[in-house]
Image 1 (cartoon, rainbow, N blue to C red):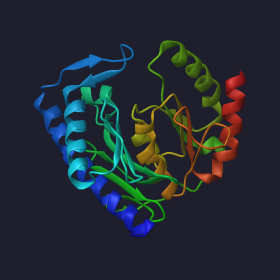
Image 2 (image 1 turned 30 degrees about the vertical axis):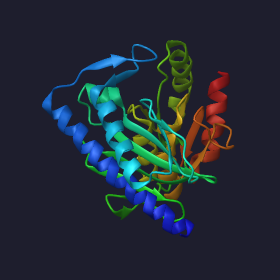
Image 3 (image 1 turned 90 degrees about the horizontal axis):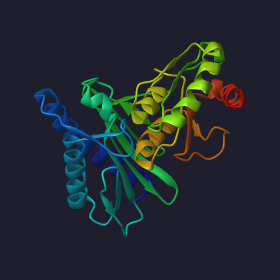
Image 4 (image 1 turned 45 degrees about the vertical axis):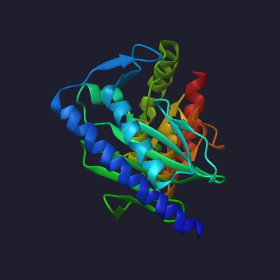
Length: 265
């Protein structure tokens, strides 16, 4: 199978499983039967639907792609032999989910030896399904999407996120306070996968955050890239979960400089 053919196959699987898991979680949220515990800090939450969503997705992958590897936020782990590994965030934005704020999503992304190849990010409460395959473009609810055309930093709407750890949150808050006077405004939605997709479809000019994990990044990265975004670290080099900057091209260089200047401030 060609790489384009494989990418589209993986894209369809990601969409299918994200929709099934997301609709299940949304029904659970609407039922009002949601309990939560914490993980790495008091603000790092997990609900029974995070675990149920991951179980549903991994069961589907075992049936559809039994030779692939799996890395899941809630502990799913499997070594594969196919060269494809899936990175799963069963509910990205669990605090939003718990408080019944609609900014949460199921994020499923696949990587091969060259990096992200396909992914889907499904935000059930918003009714938004974002998908992409490498070399095949990105879509929102089946329609092709692209980044916003803007070259003026002062007109840029920028999104960010905050670490679960207090000391890191305080440092980042200082950086944001320095930046906010030089851009249109700052948004903080609380779900990295959605933030990346909002850059992809032009709802945001840029998104940046530190201290993510692979499951936060992979699906949104391929969607943003295929929509025309540039996804790097804060210096414009290869992206890692530790530093993620996704921008439309017109403000990328100016935003790199602004982040650097704000970090020194």
